[in-house]
Image (cartoon, rainbow, N blue to C red; front, side):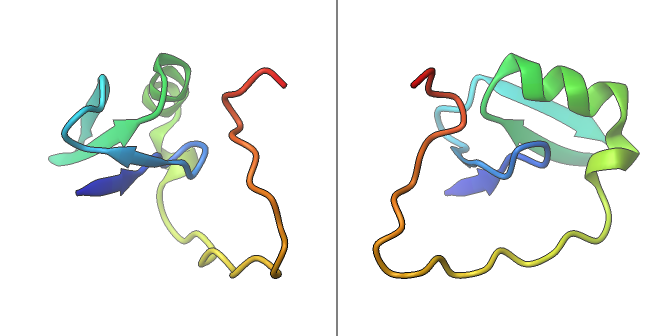
Amino acid sequence: LTATDPVCGMRVDRATAKHFSRHEGQGFYFCSAGCKVKFEAEPAKYLGDRPEPQAMPKGTQYTCPMHPE
């Protein structure tokens, strides 16, 4: 099972996630300690209505936001 990091939107494997936090009884998984810290500092900023992700055009290449290149 996967979860979506509420800060950056990255998909996180719940079974192997190293960063987890609870807010108002709900659990959240994070891709990194940095995202967890940002969320815990301002949870309201990352909760609530968020636009649905849109399908990417054919040929789009995904780049991991955590990768240095």
